[in-house]
Length: 226
Picture 1 (cartoon, rainbow, N blue to C red):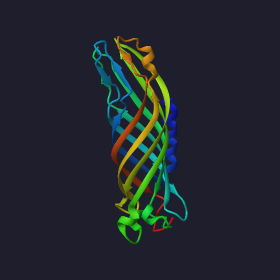
Picture 2 (cartoon, helix red, strand yellow):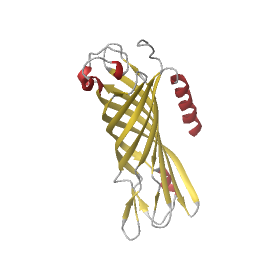
Picture 3 (cartoon, helix red, strand yellow):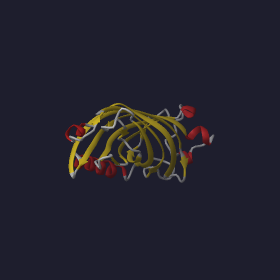
Picture 4 (cartoon, one colour):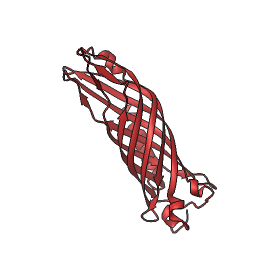
């Protein structure tokens, strides 16, 4: 499965390198209160840490409206945690997000050019609201006394956020973003194989809050024309 994601990422990058693509990074804070373990003394520990997210996307848009699409391959790397008995818990998210940006204050704009080149009110042209359905493969693992149990689980999610495009040049756009993503149900099935002395909640909803940036590249945009 790792190889599939790597190949898909390379194909996306190779198709985009002479066209329009972006790279992004952000930090994600997780809330998965039902995803926890309970020790024999009845104390508990949440098992999903916070962490970094990295992504690469391909850009295209509607012709006559400011609706832009940025399908993204993304990896989220929460911090691994250690339990009271020394077991290590680790999970990674490999995702496909279908990001869709709505430029609400310039919705009827038909300029197919980077923000820097657009005429008119800069704030009006650059602000957008993003909706982002997604599907993720959660690669989860538990290591107890040197023995690792791992599994892959799938989860659907929906994200929403706001951002603002800032043109650095005609070819490069810098975009700070804030947002949230919600997973209605996620499963950590490798816990079943851990056979540890604690009990656990194997399923939980997950809320992610994030802040980050995107760099967009428009190598298809030359001399003010496509």
